[in-house]
Image 1 (cartoon, rainbow, N blue to C red):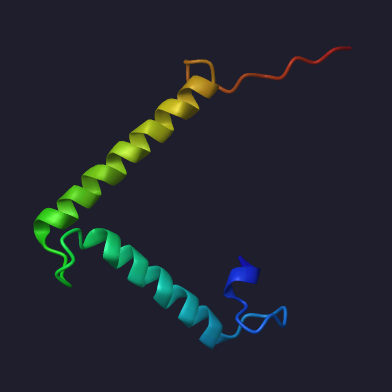
Image 2 (image 1 turned 120 degrees about the horizontal axis):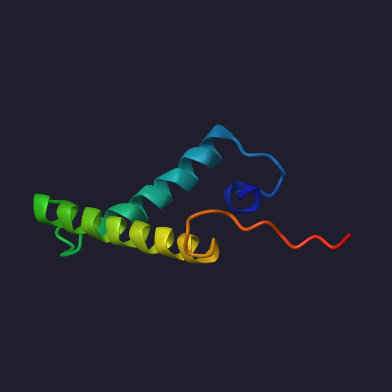
Length: 81
């Protein structure tokens, strides 16, 4: 993350570099929300984005559940004495 935000590669992030990085990130997020590209996010677009996030979150929970053996509990690694 430091490398991406450090515009002049001096190993530090200034407030200006931080703000510029976040501005670009927010612009990208807005573009994804504004599905018809009209420059505004309406209720329909916001609802669609919320639904998509919920679906993605549910899929992530399912994958975690499967990795944990289907019971939601972490499996202890096999330890050989």
